[in-house]
Image (cartoon, rainbow, N blue to C red; front, top):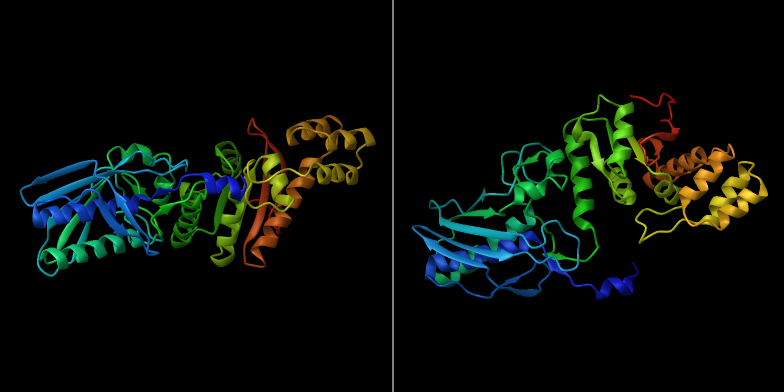
Length: 370
């Protein structure tokens, strides 16, 4: 997708922004009996935005407001979810205390921005919520000592589509956002999940993780490393660059990369985002690889005019040309180049659609295993 196309897409709002606006409306109602609708907040970079309330409720000692999350044109699993903030008066001097309601997870492992035992409400949303509580307290005569419970009904089921279970965030979703804005196809949340996966693995003392492009390639790698725990598996998807650059600054001793021929062909050709919409196979370069492997001229020509990388792989295999191994070597070389000398050893598995390993480049000690 080009930058021009991306600018035509509609941006959305993070769960953190929605929870903040709902908390502001609820606290104002708790103090004044009136819900502001729409409710305006200021995002971390100074932008003023307003949200319509989808739900308003008051009761003995509490007020509750909800906002339907609009993720814009981003393929976000929480798009359309109801984000609910319930505000209750807290004990004097306690400030803002956060609680996880229905569908919001609890942190159970070290290595995340929030310590174990705490609701999975990230630092920036916490700061935003604390800010609006202080604002309303000053304007409406409150103490600012409150409990804020954030809920996302149905969030426990939605969380199964995220990396939260592997990260040790149990019972629901995380309340996320650093800017308050979801930018279409920025994929920032996915990359952030990869980063948190590395953090959790490091905090747990793991020395080996797997970055796989999908479930099939992950299963193939784990069959070779069955001792690895689930937290060692990083759902890299198309974001090889997001994983490798983070490991460059936060290294682990061993990284297994596992993926399909086409995606790792693009990695070897220098692409760090492997999605078909954002990087393309260079068939001329692939044809040259075949030529270097001794392929006949007709196979080289066929590769230059091929429609898909799989087509080339099939032709090469039929001709007895092990182009997959060359692609795996190039992918490992590219990964090490991104790591820039960081103390991370890399092995690569190329996996076909049936889950069979068609090429393997081992770690530098040539054992291929830990």
